[in-house]
Image (cartoon, rainbow, N blue to C red; front, side):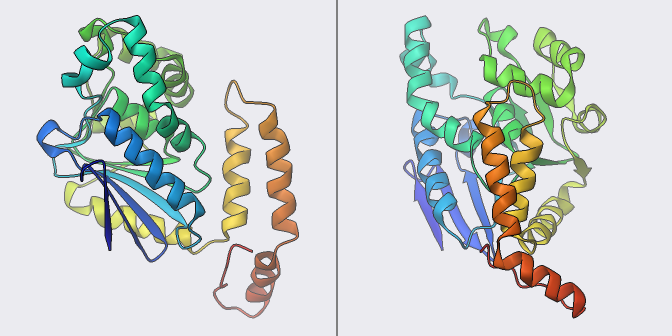
Length: 266
């Protein structure tokens, strides 16, 4: 069953442990409006609380774009000057924060354009799988604006400061194979194989112990620059939950009995 949000421009569905979020604004290459950010916030809140969702997949509608950036048609109204920009940031902050702190594994399934704020969304994913036709860029310098500090830090953390500066200074698009070499995406696959590769990966992750995955996610995140010290306490709590969990007992028993474990996230 598909749920529609933001007047149908955000879609959500759950199947076999995979929560799928679709940016559904293909006439504008899935450019993000304020309303879409608010819809994303609602979806992620629901998926975070839904125990049936083990893995989140983000994708764009159609074949031309993942997310091409912010909806420029709203710039005059919402981002016309510095004060308007701050108001825009406040209006979209909840969705951004929800994505940044989403507790379950996130995979970005990328086809076509992945630009500006769209690349920012993809960078928040734990794993990025790109089709051969995918393109990546940070065109702010070609629009006379600037990217926020969180997005720039995320970009530099993933690909390093030299590559990040090249992308930011030039505003040029990076093709899929170069994106793979830079580490911007984990894997580049044929366009026709993209959905199957992502689904197979998501199901492989969904079959593993949710508490162990949560511990792995917060621990890896702690190695990134500018980590909130509070995250260190969260890591220890996550590790302790694994050691005390029913899943840990199930994992040991399944190994000894030479069968697939049946993890429940408890």
